[in-house]
Structures are given as structure tokens and as C-alpha cells.
Amino acid sequence: MSGRVVISGDDFGISEAYSIGALRAWKKGAVSALALMVNLPTTEYALELWRRHGASTAPLSLHFNIVLGDPVSDPASIPSLVDGDGHFYRSSMWRGDDPVDEKCHGTVYPNQRDVEREALAQIERYRELVGSYPSHIDCHSVVVDPVARALCRISHALGIHCEGSPVVPGSIVTCAECMPMGGNSERVAITSRGSTPEDWHRDAFGIESCPFDVAVVHVHPGYIDQRLLDSTSMVYARCRDYETMTDSSVKKALDVRGIEMVSYEALYPGGFKEPGAQLVRRLVQEVGAVLS
Image 1 (cartoon, rainbow, N blue to C red):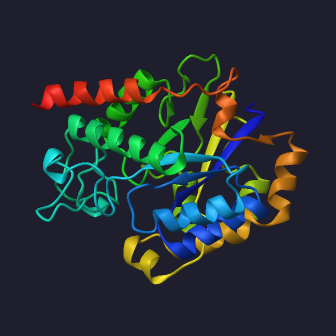
Image 2: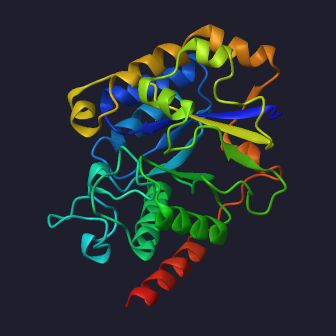
Image 3: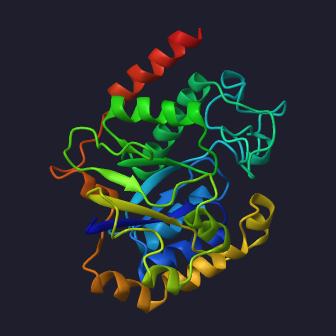
């Protein structure tokens, strides 16, 4: 049994209204971390809210995004990720690794080095915006094999934990996602419709049976505005997640089971050690040398 869980409020920064709701879900309810998207026009608004209402206590992680908006790096340097106008291809244009993947039914498939270059750029942008490097990286919407391999390689090189890698660099702590993306599992269906208090009461995410030290569940609690409607097909599920994650019975259900809500910093018993700008620059140079 996992006695600790990270409940991540994903997509922080995707729109103004959504970010207001996500931060309120952290303040009022059962959300223990916020996953920040760093490349969008509304990112800085989300950070303004965060600084005003939660910077001292609301933990952030990096929600790596390569399917919405524009890249942080030069579009010409990541041709497999962008269209002719330099915008990221939307997830529906990607080809998934699973032939029955309902989200990805296109032909776009990324080059691992392009993903690495953009990931490093977003990690550096995160540092510029937040003032420190992230202690965790996960990916928004689409995680095909080159994306997973790129994030794992970078995270292990920098000593930063990432989604899909149970082992935390430099630690004996293990961590696992309880809500895998892809496939037809009940947990994916819950993501699509939004969770209900009953899902948490009956432990639909399998936190109690998770064999790792820390379990992770992703939720999307927030309000709706036009930018959100224009950005994603997952809309009303976010309203349900907001209502659920601010329902006091959800946290009580975790407390009764003896499950502690934690942030990603709990994965580092000795404290998270930032990689340092020099190490990041060296990895950037390594990726660039391979591409040149």
C-alpha cells in the first residue's frame, strides 16, 4: 500500500479562468501540487495568481507541453514538432503508439532529439519564471515512445524525477502514476469525464494497492473560459473535477485510509538538489552537437 499520494492539478496556465479554479482547488481542497505549462500566453497570469495567493506553499512542477501553442525553442530547430507556421501540432494530428488510441489518429511522430531540445528549453523557461528548476516533469496530453525516452534521459541526467520513471534520481523512493494515459482503463475514462467523490471513496485510482512509496493521480480542476474552449476537447470534465476536489469528503476519505497528500518534494528525502544552470547548458550543448 502507498501511504502517500501526489494529487496533481494539471494544466496550470492553460487559461486565466482555469488557472483561477486550479489554484482555488489547491487552497480549498484535495490538490497537493500544480503542474505549470510554461509556453502559453496565459502562463504569466497563472504565475501572478500563484505569487499573490500561494507562492510560499503551493508546490509547482513542470507540465511539459508540445501539443498546444508555440514552442519555447526556435521552431526551425524542432521540425518534427511544429507545422509550417511554427505552431505545435495538436494531439489529434499525432500518431499514437497504440493503434486504438482515440486521441491520436494522425501521422505526426516526433524525433527524440527535437523533444529533448524543447524539453530543455521549457525547463530553462520554468527556471526563469519560477526562480528555480522543477523537482518533477510530466507531459501534457500525448506521451509516445520518443517523448517518454527523451524525458527520462533528460531527467536522469539532471537528477529530476519524471513521469513514467518509478525511480527517483539519487533516492531510494519510488513513485508511480495511478492514472496511465492511453488504453481503455477505467482510470482513463474517469479522466475523460472528470472524477466524482464516489471515485475517491472507493479508491478507483488504486492508491491503496499502489506498490510504490508514493502514488500520483492527475486531475484537472478549474473554471471554463473561451481560451479553454478553444484549446482543448476536455472541458466539462474540468468542472466536475473542480467540484470533486473541493468536496471536503474527498480529503476525509484519504485521511480515513491513512493516506497523506504530499508534493513531489517528498520524493527527495534529503531535499531536492537543483541541477544548476551549468549542467543544463552542458546538456543543451550535447543535444545541439548531435543535431548539427
